[in-house]
Length: 90
Image (cartoon, rainbow, N blue to C red; front, side):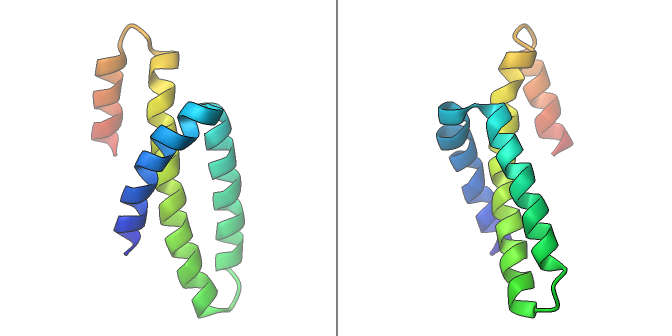
């Protein structure tokens, strides 16, 4: 279930989020949301923990899409090479 959330978050992050608000703003929102989600996972409630894990997987997918949007901005001459390195790193 979490893998499906992560996989569905990637196209949303690259197509919807990065193209509309930019990669930097998207990553700032994603990192802030992951922080809040991680904080709620420390509460002593198993249902909240499960929701937090699912939400974290979705947010990591969104962030992944944002990272790939930033590559051409920072490395315009080596876009293909850096994209391959980022994909290989996971």
